Length: 457
Image (tube, rainbow, N blue to C red; front, side):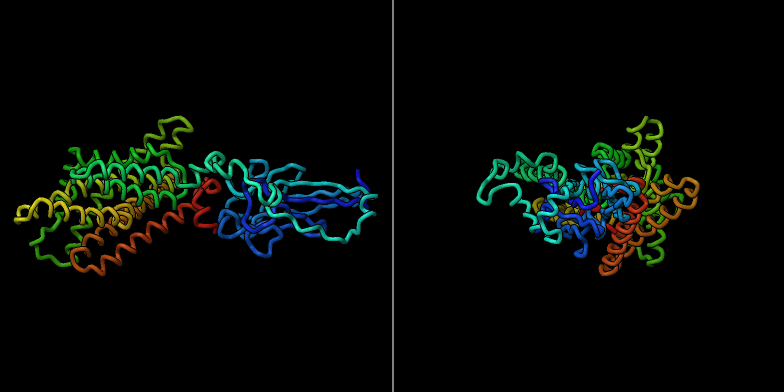
């Protein structure tokens, strides 16, 4: 053991590649003061608030601990109830744990990493230096790793050193898909129908990717694609005729024609049964199917495929809405407008232009329309799975509220444009509120990647 007069120096050093801009690469820990790590400027180890959103304002603390019996000195680390957790050597920190030289501290699941370093200066060395003399300023990350004028090979060819970060943090896949869609647009010049399919698919993908990033939960792409395709197949199957007969013939959901003189209340009732209840149940079928299929599969495939929490329901519900929107727009609305234009004496090119002008706002509006309603209902389906004893109460509330929003959108669309904007904003707000609440309820919240974009609570 060391004597009581020895000096114990402890440091936290940023692992190369995780440097905070404008901060030091090595932080001294004082034996008489706690070292708080976070984004708050009053912390002892401060991370830039703009570049490190996954780090909480007060994320973790390193405390000095002294033993009066043998003069032994040590440091312990505790998490300060951070949003993304603190990881010690790859394992999430629970409670307080003593630090050993070489321990790696990660702020968040994939956040910046600090290395704990510890050294003891014997008594003779201590006497040769004033104890109160402060340590020299730590070098910046670039100064500590290279000479001022040197250029490394990876700096000249950065693509070699980025590794997995290129696909996880650089939006590589969306960029690649954008390039593919642009090339396809050039390749299909002169084929307006192919152009419409490409434009609609790209816009729908961009809208869904936005929702996916906000949800922040990993879900296999083939599961999401299967949900969209399942809804499209339902619309093309005889099952659609059964839905239409039940909701628009048996129930009072017959949709009004343009020449019908109806009041707003009558419109609302018709759209509630004929559009809201019918279409939301139809779009929910793939989500409910995923719930049933997953229970027949072994783990971990079941967790990847099924709906186990509200975030799963939102992701599958909004994917189902993408399939519904694409088929409805490309297979019904755009062709009907083009045919109406040609029958009125217009030329084919004019009809195609009008069809394209209708296509873009309809697909973009799916975020505040079909994706909002289906994602909102998906939240309740996931919540019912998370709380099965209350499912009889949860599911009706979600189904009726999503259908009511759907009906309100359709009814106001034929009356007043300003009201339509209000309803669209309201629907979008409902979806965003459901996503935020689903992230709080998520059993896998510590692994949610949306917190690095939105920031901790």
